[in-house]
Length: 351
Image (tube, rainbow, N blue to C red; front, side, top):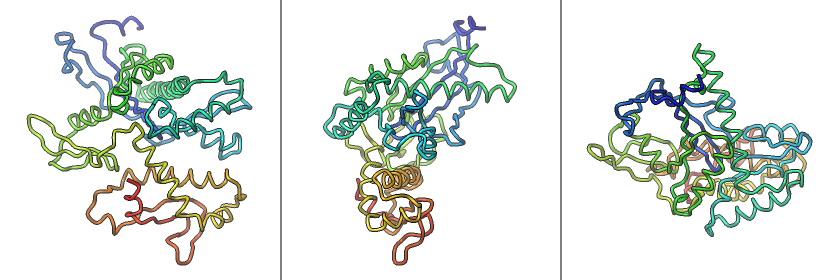
């Protein structure tokens, strides 16, 4: 069976990895190879439709790591949240925004400094990992989880182990500026060390264009992804013309920087209510407890902004609801049980 993967006519298992600053996702499709036209993209004809790998029932998983000093191992993704919630590891052990460590622009200098401080605070048993080491560790855990899920899902449908038959190709979606910064080779190196087979990089604009072309194109100005940072179809025909729904500034950080802005703004917005929140949640008045509330708000904001379009004409008349389970209603404040409403115009100002 192993030899079949090297045959010219073997199917191709294409795995797409969206390695995000805040969340990551994995999708896969089994493609056929047309031997007569092996150098053309048209050789890849779908055998099975595109499928998402689910993480705890969701299409995304947190892009984060933490060192478990008790078990002497790295934990990743949503497992970090569970371990912190259960009190197995402290909040301070959470390492996020890992890929921004590859950025060398002034705009993300503060984030890089925080990351380096996190690395310096790790115990000696971690062997002082570099940023590239952390990326490799995360991608290794992500790919192993995805591989196991793909195999088990196919087994439940009575299908063969595709990894024994197909040639596996992995495309990792990264910001376009990776190529300008010259850090694309560092990402490839980290992916190879993680055991990801045949890794290649695709920029986010290119991935968006492929997504548009591979799905049904609706009329012009349709929005394919409900997000602040999205692509809008302007025209179709011989050439597909797109534009960014909200124009970026060329920085590597994207949504992660927006999350950081929101965290700081939310801390100010909810400052007068924070002590009451801690009482509601039966938490002590400590920096870690406050950070836990802020992290919960940011996590829900990350979900909320994906179904909220900041360019709507009636945007200023709308509000964004942030869920913080456990907080109680506050008279005179836009706070209901477990929900806090923030004016849309305040969110737009973050841009």
